[in-house]
Image 1 (tube, helix red, strand yellow):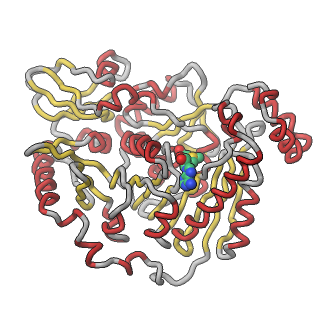
Image 2 (cartoon, helix red, strand yellow):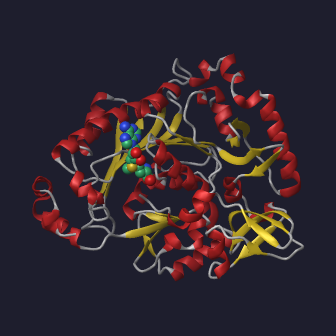
Image 3 (cartoon, protein in one colour):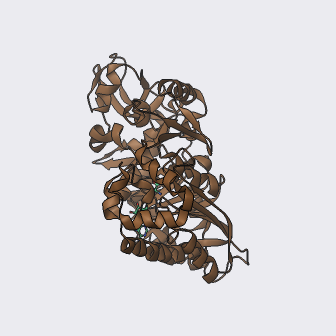
Length: 466
Ligand code: SAM
């Protein structure tokens, strides 16, 4: 992008902030944007995922991102977002600087973590991988349409311990006070680090817009504060360079909330590091007594426990149908979680949610994914959910059908086509590419009928970061 396309007020502000190095920074806009992917360690560490990851490293000529052990750069003309391994959730396409945020947060397996502004899911999928599938991750996105994309990415990467909500920070803080061990706040910002990737962001930029972003960030931070446990830590990040939205916002936060200590900040600059740029700050809340007035378990009313769908006869029946189906079709599955029914969709809510909170807290909340979607209720039967397939290992399924990533069959499959299969194959079949699940098929009379959700058929290989 040509430097002349930048708003004059923006370049003036950069010159003031960077002094002698401003030219080097501004020239970086003329270079090509950096692109990256991060392996999903829930899939890439062992078995077929390990070999597929090794193959991807060679095929896409990947080179390591210094600040993220699972992050890699790729160059044009590699199109990893269009490869079947992307549909299989082996990796997430993520801008390399953005990988610094979850690395700084360092969530641990078993913790209770919130990603407050999560769509399309770069940080959520990174956090979930670092949690190794254990504990509870609440991944929230205020805009329902973006929350759908987030949910698709959560499913594609096979996250079973993750709840996707679509609420305002205020709605969440009223329900989840002092609940989270760690919070990621990747705040909506003026996007100065997006100019190279998305020239439309240049047109949106103005000093007034920066002020609006700073004021919104301040509002969201206050809700994040309310939800952070004493002793817990929080990462605040943006993809902008503006001091107003970065250092000044954090300074105001630590001044008005003296129990928040700033532990570290880092800026990634596009003229100094290979990445589009990011600001990340790690903060910690002072420890204090637990179980105070704001402990959500204190509010655990009988109504909260009994009014949820958990105890309904319909739920019991649906779950029983699922368990008898799974006993035959998924002999290797040890289903963990609390069954929940939302409409016709059956979920397994992570056990940690029930143990640490209670399902009544979900009443009236928009919850696009209440944990792992395991089945869909049909008339007198259930159908296994796509998300379940994506969270399985092939050895858990009674039947699998594998295709090589470089053959024509997988391309046909991802577009929604059916496949000829041996007549001996009959019933629900976990379909895999080089051993990695991509969805369900149902085999009958030598045909494998495609059960990939319709919305994913056209888009499955193109859900990249937005
Ligand atoms: N963390 C995401 C990732 O890594 O893929 C990117 C998040 S993006 C920088 C910021 C998100 O904040 C957007 O998805 C946007 O819809 C959301 N947002 C906008 N206004 C908000 C508000 N008032 N409160 C909370 N989130 C908001």
